[in-house]
Length: 184
Image 1: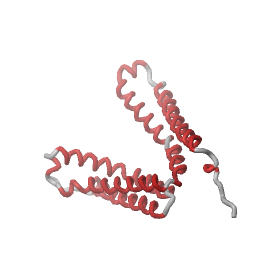
Image 2: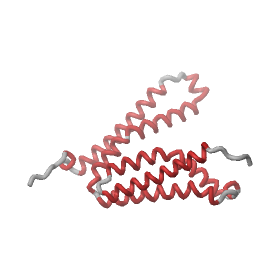
Image 3: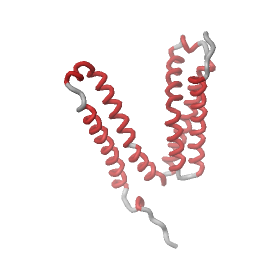
């Protein structure tokens, strides 16, 4: 009986950690280089006239590039951790609770229809609900990716259930933003 050994079982824990941290360092450097190249297009007069707007744009660009490039080391870290049942159990449980909490927050304004304007907590929940609805496509894609990476069937089901809840949240967002409302 021969055992099939993959490349990631031949390298040690510190090497795996180094690969993942190196990937994040590469993402950080890449975002810095993109911001540097973006900043070169502005003249000193532009910086004087709209420095805050330029800085805000650079911050968003740097964050977006970092997030995009850091998908690779994050996926690699999850691949390295696929043998850890305890990690994946906690991770998928947290993802499911996040989706259930998001659904609760999205449905809360329906239950407290008139109080959302007067109670500060409900105003905050309205804001979080809108963010949750806008973020649902990202969470759906993430939960589906995690379902593919999850090492066991019950963990995959948990992630698929979380993705299904996020689809319901996206549907609530579609109703919220695209369904015409009667005037007050």
